[in-house]
Image 1 (cartoon, rainbow, N blue to C red):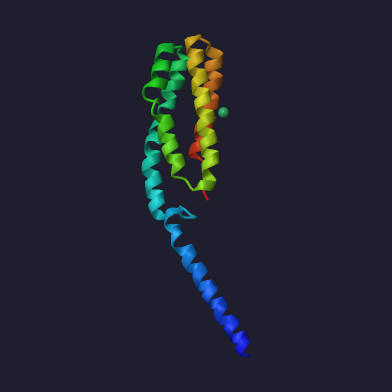
Image 2 (cartoon, rainbow, N blue to C red; image 1 turned 45 degrees about the vertical axis):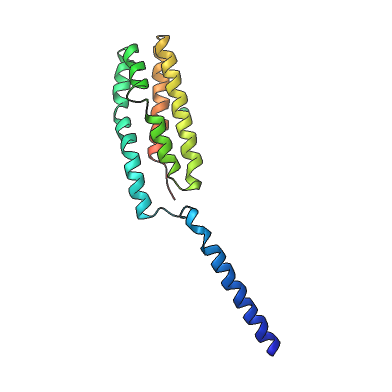
Length: 147
Ligand code: ZN
């Protein structure tokens, strides 16, 4: 009987120690869910990405009109910051949501590079098909399902 008592108190000490040691370093680990604060931060970071999404119709019309100089200008000018803006969003996601977001950014910019090349070569068909692919990846990024 006294033995059991001492085991119980030992377990209690161990549990308390574990709770304390798990409690302190948690400050540096991202929260396991999207907190209200994090969602507010994400909204701010997504705003310029949404603005860039609206300029995609400009890109489409430049391609359709075969305005190759404007196409390249748009990709390097107004859309030039987009990669950084998307990566800023990606870094603010929970770790488990980041790989998918990163992959879509990589895909999107692969398509942008091919549109750039197509514009230089005045390759209309390639520009149109790559624009469609870019749009898909862009929308997939904005529609990412977060945990
Ligand atoms: Zn793609």
